[in-house]
Picture 1 (spheres, rainbow, N blue to C red):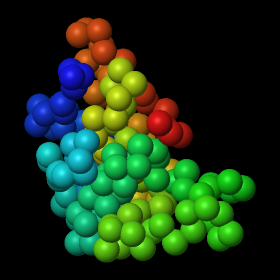
Picture 2 (tube, rainbow, N blue to C red):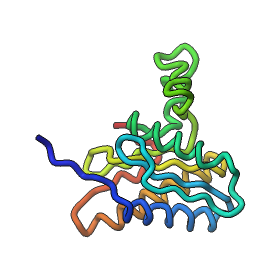
Picture 3 (cartoon, helix red, strand yellow):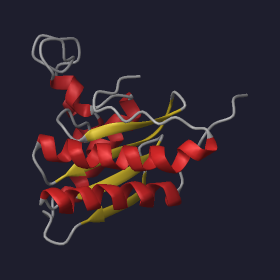
Picture 4 (tube, rainbow, N blue to C red):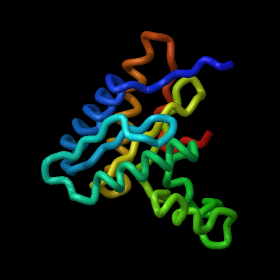
Length: 159
């Protein structure tokens, strides 16, 4: 048996608060979703003024990032993004009843080398979603560092 780390509501709230603060700072209305390692939501928040489609899109991005253990934009990053035409996973975005997101805004949450969940953002452009997502990961890193845990805070995560 292997001991595991499990993301909990307290950590999810810290991440959401940091993403929302960054979104307010850069002037964008986001929806932020934090999921567990199985892709199920722990917490989600839609800012006032954010699009009504945001919750589903943010969840899809978080689900994909956690489940496939990579930042969602890496699926379509040239030249070797696996979901690009003629590459090995072209069409993967139609998997899981269309819940598989292959565009910017989903990041796996990696603690001590293990994927413990995902964060998904919807509402900004790719650069804005990335800034808010990185803010969420950095907040978790700050929270867990005193306990001796390392959180990956890079935008290009692939496990």
